[in-house]
Amino acid sequence: MAVKHSVETLLAESFNESDLTSKQKAVLRASLSLFSEKGFEQTTTTDIARVAGVAEGTVYKRFKTKDDILKAIMSPFLAEVIPQLITEFTDAVVNASYPHFADFLQQAIGNRMQFALENRKQIRVFLQELTKRTNSQELTILIPELDQVVSALTTVLDHYKQQGEVVDWPTMRIARYIASTAVGYMLPAVLMNQSLSEAQLAKFSQEATEFLVRGLTPVAG
Image 1 (spheres, helix red, strand yellow):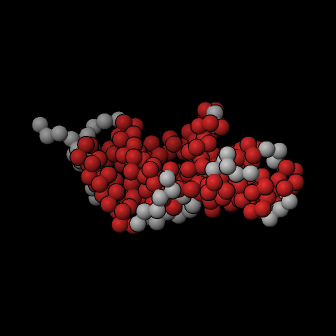
Image 2: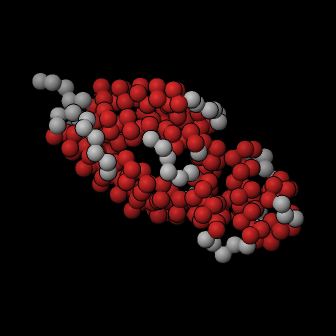
């Protein structure tokens, strides 16, 4: 299943809707690209200015440090990009109808694996910096969207429970197993910036689905 939007595209849209000047937007776009390629610590303001096509002094007019640049990227990522991505995933996958639990898992896991692969450079930046530079208070902005996913997922799981295809466990317990299995397959590729073929993605998705179906199917008797 194709992914509708990329992290980079959504961030670019967020930058475009801000009150930043064209040069400041160029600085943020260049910074995101360089942080993704080289890492935050290895990127210099000279690198950023060169890629953005601006004087190094222009970088410092709005952003006093690299941390200020990263914060200017992380803030819309948390406030705008993640909520939109969650809503898109919920509408496209969780709210869709599938005849069997295995079909639902195949689509959900395949979708998230495809998303992780297509956005692996950006995801690596945010994974590396999120825990170090974002406090728990900032993450509360995501609660409404996460509640939306949990509510939709509960409806889906209740349906398959009634069909006898899913064990009668709480939604969050099942969601943790699904998420941890999918992450276990994709995290190495994301962190090491590996490319995967469509055949490899399909294989991983199928393996994860088979593992989860076996573990989440009610035991007879």
